[in-house]
Amino acid sequence: MLLAFDVGNTNIVLGVFKDDELIQNWRLETDNSKSADEYGMVIKQLFDYSGLSFDDVEDVIISTVVPSILFTLQHMSMKYLSRRAIVIEPGIKTGLLIKYDNPKQVGADRIVNAVAACAKYGGPLIVIDFGTATTFCAITEKAEYLGGTIAPGLKISSEALFEMTAQLPKVELEEPGKVICKNTIQSMQSGLIYGHMGTVQYIVDKMKKELMEISQCSVEPKVIATGGMSTMMESGVDCIDVVDKMLTLEGLKLIYEKNKKGNGKQREVDPCELETLN
Image (tube, rainbow, N blue to C red; front, side, top):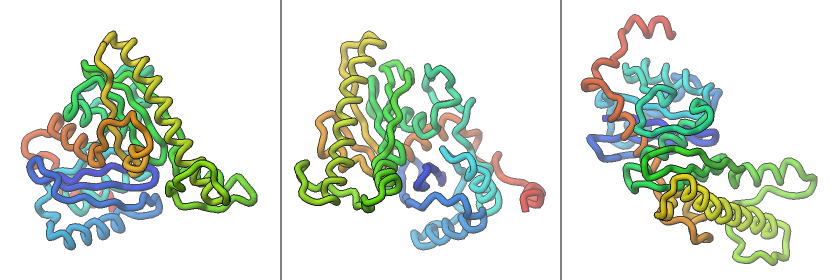
């Protein structure tokens, strides 16, 4: 089995693949204060509850946009799974041609999403990830990663309204059903949610034109959305073609296949190495 970690600023999504099938997935809060032992125990409980065993994990792969938590998960993998994790970082094989000014600056999650989207849907593509930040990525039909846009996510925007104003409250991110609202909570919900939908529609429309011009392709890009808020956003715009919640985990599986060596035994950890970590 393969254990895949997608570490975001707010949540860690982890999934277990058996052969080519995603057989289980969970979502944890990203917590820099947790130790390798704490993460190991939490994940062990999730495995036990699902009838899975650490002994069956042959490899681990990690994508993270939170560098401070990487060592913790690497340590956890070595101590509890006896495996050196594969990490999405510069130099790893993806099958993409990265045309960013500095490829090292592209978030690992954006690359992983692009790999999965290209494999599943073909290019040209626009991939939107509704996470802590909302990211838009443009990929040509030749699997060229051109770049994209990064905007504040819904939760960031909501927190900013609450923290930076004296009288505005925290609100649930729910659609109020109208934009002419008669109370503060609904007015905030309207501005946050419908404002974000407007942002998505505008950026996608503009990105489609630019992508078709740059790639000199007459085929209109397909728009794939993923992330926690993707279903809500898709309901209010007409520019999203597919919502794929497991896109990042599937991208990790694909990158693993491109980079694995042997049957995973080569990444077993020598017990002496654990001595140096403890």
